[in-house]
Each structure stands twice: as C-alpha cells, then as structure tokens.
Amino acid sequence: MAQQQTAQSPVGGLLGEKERRLLEKSVIVRLVEKSGLKPIGDVAQRLLAVLSGPEPDTENVCRLFERDPSLASNVLRIANSPLYRAAETIDDIRTAVVRLGFEAVKELVIVHVHNGILKDSTATASFYRAHSAACAAIARELAAMFAPEEDEGLFSSGLLHDVGKLVLLQGGQQLYKTTLDATDMREPEETLDLERAELGYDHAALGGLVLEHWAIPSPVPEVVALHHVDTAKIEIEHLVK
Image 1 (tube, rainbow, N blue to C red):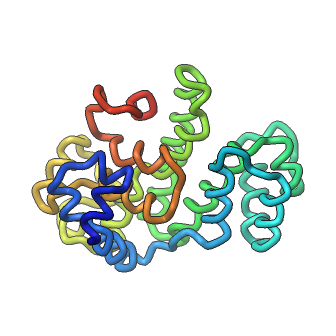
Image 2 (spheres, rainbow, N blue to C red; image 1 turned 30 degrees about the vertical axis):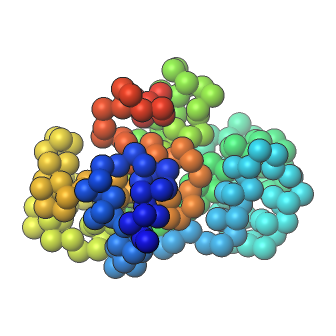
C-alpha cells in the first residue's frame, strides 16, 4: 500500500519504478526520523494549504498566525531581513499579508520552515544554510529575468533543493560518512552516480518526496525532485531549467 501511495503522489509519478519502490512512504518517514530534522509544524502546514488554495482569506490567514506567535514573529523577522529585501519595515502579520500578498507570505512561511529544519551550529548546518540561501537568491534573480510569474516557487525551490542531501547527511547514511560530506565539491553528476550506485536513488528524488511528505505546496517538491534531471519532456520544465 505504501509503495502505491508513493507511485500515486505527484512526485512519485515523476520517478522511475526502482526509485518508487525504494522510497515508499514508510521509508521516507523512517529516513526523516533518523535524520533528526524537524518536520513542519501544524500551523505552518495549515497556512501553506490555505495560502496555496484558489481564494485565500486574509482573516483566516491572520487567525492561523495568531495560533503560533513564534511563527508569526519569525516570519516578520524574515520579511525584514536582507534575504527578503523588504522595501519598508513590516511590523505585523496583517501588514505583511496585505502589503506583500499571499504568494509572498507563503514564501516567508517556507523560509521559516527551512530555517527550522536544522538549528544546529555545526559546520554542516552552516554550509547547508549558506548554500541554500545562495541558491535561493540566484533562483530569484533568474526568475526576474526569465519567469517573473514564478518568482516565489523558484525562490522556495532553490532554498529547499538539497533537503534530500541533508536527510542523508544527518541520518548517518554510510555513503555520506565515508565518501561525501556537506562541503563536497565534486561535480554533481559524480555525486548523483555515487548515490544511485549505493542507494538506488539520488538526493533530489528523496528531497522531493520529503517535501511532499511535509506538505510543502506544489510545484516545489516536483522541482526539487527534478533539479538534476533532463526535463525537456516534463510539464514543469520551465521551473527546473
């Protein structure tokens, strides 16, 4: 049944049969638990669902934020940080929702989720956060040039693109203990070949399924799952290229 659930999921439908078999739902849950990474909180999960709906309601969004003052405070801090580059100071959630719009607020919640995944002060955590922020910034610049309508989706995908690698690193997977590490600078294809030979899947496929498990809205999980794939014949190719 778990294998069938993976196959029927949006990300699972993009993967090969072997990857789906090896990364069934129970495996994803076990890998995340072993990694010690923090799953998305209930309020953040509900907010992402509401903000991804066809007609989000401002009052509903604000009420959800009221249920988690820590989340609201963190989102406001992110909104006013250099990473987000807010033009003016935003001092309350209602202002953020009204001034920035639902898509931007959804992005801020995703940044909050990303920041909460790994709170360690280790070299691995520091490298991961810096690398993710750099990729997100580059993704935003590329979106501005080539796909401005996809700004938030590309930024979030850049921010979370290596979460699968983080799961393997933090989970003590043998390949990452003996050959690869967070700061490994070998060519991406070499890393992917090593992962596929050892595990039968790569960190991109795993990352997409982890984000889907955490209820991160589409198309972010799909983009993450495919960020090392030739996407010429895939519907969301314009987001991955």
